[in-house]
Length: 208
Image 1 (tube, rainbow, N blue to C red):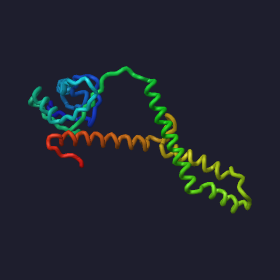
Image 2: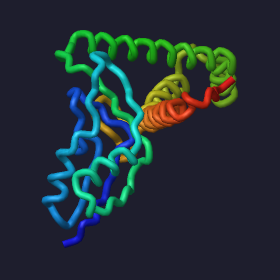
Image 3: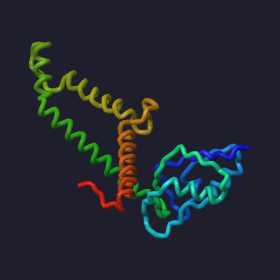
Image 4: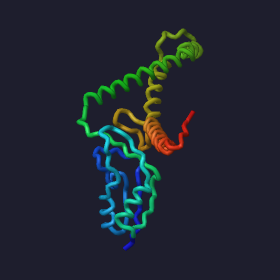
């Protein structure tokens, strides 16, 4: 039976217990299931501080702990080199506060989008363009609200829905939405910054 252990550590893992085990931050594979079970139970960190905090750790420390348990295991790491443990104290769910934050964000996005659309329409004089098109095509003055304005309003709403790839809980396709993509890029940048900053603490190098 092979003793090669494949180790895939996630870039960041949120935990709520102070004792962090290998199974919490990584996925393991080995032909010998006993080795997987034994390694999953390895404690890789004990958090002392009683506050929310992110800890930057190295996979080399995990490999060292696995070797201490069984020196015959050959570890093949196929995941991250440095990873983050995001310790969050266990808290009771606060649904009212979460809904309030969600509604506040939705209100800000709605008002901001409405302001941007109105500003664009005023700068581009969309209303004047519609009046000219109406006059050229039909030969009479526009009454102010025509099929042009109606089509523009409906098309704008449909364009936003198609661009963001979902409406409410329904998604138009299986592709991630632009917001999901941006949030993942933002999260990746934060994780990389935390890891890079942790490696620079001793050298005194920083961004100026």
